[in-house]
Image (cartoon, helix red, strand yellow):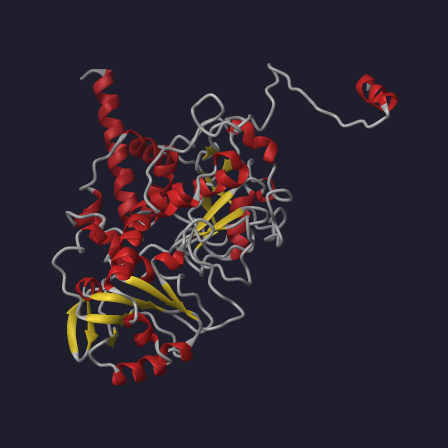
Length: 474
């Protein structure tokens, strides 16, 4: 047997081992779903990267942990001089992964999940990726904090601080899709999280993202319509005006039950859902009958998305994405006026065009049904068309969430490359504009001067040429 064939067989064996490891660590995808995917070159590259990761037992000391820094912005917590290596995009580097082991019990800290693998695969397969850390604007630590399985805050902080590129979190980007994930040791890092409210969000610095749904992720791997909103527009009779999706906090349950008694043919509360071990909702109780959960969502015009716990956020769980995926227009309910949820990608998405918002439990019973009934069929159809565009581009997968996050950060760090609001909401699928000579914004001058080309400085001196002369000589 030739050496080349042996090497090929060994590589395939390692890849199969990586795929198996991803199945065991998966949060959202069923084991059999992984094998149905068409693996591409970057899939193998990322899988092999993690299979070859060395192990590192973390120090028991808390020194080096970077407490989360409040009040960060792109001037105080980002070294923007690193963001001009490429004049037409923000470049991102993913360091080689390390398996961090907890010194107390030897368990791996933040083991790789299928979703984090997909996120890194999307980033590393995009034009934003660079293998050179020196030319990268941002760094994504290869530590999986997506689903809350990372460990306690101190252990996660030690794992983050162990990277040579951590630097207290400066220019690092961390993705979090669970409110249970400890972010106390994130330092100056940019957080892309689904658990933001007006209390903990750092405007213009952090990025609010959606929480993915186990049910949607499973359905997308098996359905002939990955973007389900495209499949439910035709021939569907919507039996309900409004459904209240689980989970529902104890504070909101009484007004929902009262509304269900008053409007039995228009409003229904979805409850007592059965689910699989991987969190996929199967059948739920509605109006005294058990029904398929996905079918329920496809047969309602609007879906109430509520906090799942007292003081929680209506976007910190998967119900929002489930509603959008099935063409059900979301109506978001807040519990507290002092801690309003920050909606995913809200600085770019025009949420009032495809959703509604209720300020609290009292608003549910004070005419939520009549408010929605007052919308014309044409208005509802337009809202659903906009939602289909927004969902398909920014919500449909963890990869879409990651790349949308990078586009938002690119617009902040390199403003001339920012896209107009219409392109984010109306479905214009144009490429990101490039620099001065690439047909983009004619004012998109380089952001960092090239050492080879030099630069021109315009200095206002008024009537002090002697001071200018001294400055130039220095």
